[in-house]
Length: 123
Image (cartoon, rainbow, N blue to C red; front, side, top):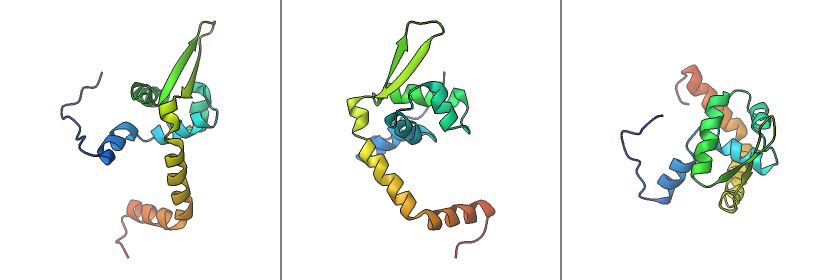
């Protein structure tokens, strides 16, 4: 298992939220779980670019931070479902607001990201 060599900086709320939500798929995982996609296979279908291993790691981190909870059913084959905790539900309005900001600035953000990927100089 990966062990951190440098302790995270936890001096303010932005540091704390960055530590909890840092990860390419965590915000999307929270949003999809909020929307009702609870099974790992459903989440994998919603985020096909992510490997199962990475999704499992990020789900575990979200669980460790008490944003989601995992329920394992005693059936064959095993069944697992994720749901938001009450603490995790408090993030839904924040994620919604970030999504709205992204939608409102979609064209500009897409242009800036593509320009950076192309290596073009800033205008």
